[in-house]
Amino acid sequence: MELSITQPDDWHLHLRDGKLLEAVVSHCSDHFGRAIIMPNRKPPVTKTSEAMAYREAILKALPESSKFTPLMTIYLTDTTPHEIKLARESRVVFAVKLYPAGATTNSQHGVTNLFRKCLPVLEEMVQQNMPLLVHGEVTSLDVDVFDREKVFIDEVLDPLIQKFPRLKVVMEHITTKDAVKFVESCDDGFVAATVTPQHLALNRNSIFQGGL
Ligand SMILES: NC(=O)N[C@@H](CC(=O)O)C(=O)O
Image (cartoon, rainbow, N blue to C red):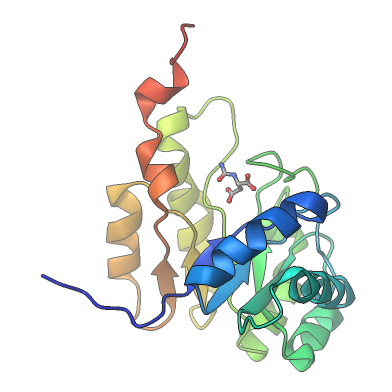
């Protein structure tokens, strides 16, 4: 099978900021037309106003002739429903990202309990047709590191979709058959996933490289 893409988009891009942003962004814009920009900067991009300022910094760092379009996201934390309205009105914020607290880089401001803390925001996201991008792993120490995605699906994602069947959800950088099966089992048009090569290439052996 051959797949031709006239110009690809990047659905999961970390640009960070400062010198790193300046060094990386032109490599992205050489290849991609648009990219979903991850908000886990330090400090995280939690507000629409911050996403707009971040977007300006990205545009400024681009080569002059570039037509690259950054599609901004905001980081779910103590986000209010009003912030979701602002995000929708801005026309530059396209999604909200859920990082379970402690799961990955700069996730310390992430969500500790989605169902206890975020229901009004999630309701507003359904109203505004604002997608939720999900870093899908639990962080409990009693869950095997290779089961984190599956347990997240069982304990968080499945109940979330039962509660909000019209919420658009994207599982980011999935790495398990369980995640693929889960996406396939959901209603068409509501739950999708991205796959990133680097998350697939790092396997059990990578953890032990260089010795224990
Ligand atoms: N291991 C990673 O890929 N980490 C990402 C966060 C993420 O997208 O999960 C990062 O920001 O460094």
